[in-house]
Length: 260
Image (cartoon, rainbow, N blue to C red; front, side, top):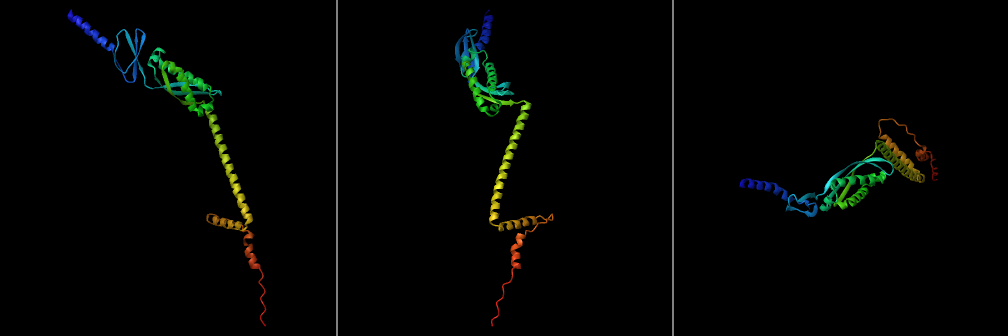
């Protein structure tokens, strides 16, 4: 009889001790409920609870990343896009995370999905593409306000991908191409205008100094002469040799009479 009693006691100890002794890690807190009543959060370290009376639920206090599934969003300017995001959150009140909501992780995920659709649905496509940082801050603030009663702190919300319809991508590509062509034409027109100004200045200088035209003519002959793979007939302006012709055709001065 004594052996049976000792065996029963040993069996009870083997079963009860693991149920009574609890170890809570540094990044966790153990929320203890006694007969359904909240006692508080304990940890980290070693704790002993009353088996079958107390219940301890561990809560992870580390920052958790979570992907928000892709959501179909209709923007303010009636463009349908598919957007996904990632959020980073952590539990700052383990008691509220257990008592106020049954599953704080799933609740945070669902509230993130609805907030993503609502906020982006009030924005235009251009804002969604160009002001993503501002939208991230708005999403973080709204989601954090809604999860605050659950003891959950949302620290970062980042929009990852914005998937546009094929027709919209082609339209945006055509618009970007047209914009590049417009800039190229403007740059070309500016270059032509500057060249015209420089030509006008050169023409004014040549008008004041006709010899510069002859120098430019001679320079052109030198540039053409450097190309030996073709024969070029180049007209010779009469003005270039007028000066020399005047010296040749000029009458000789009369000679003085011999002395008597």
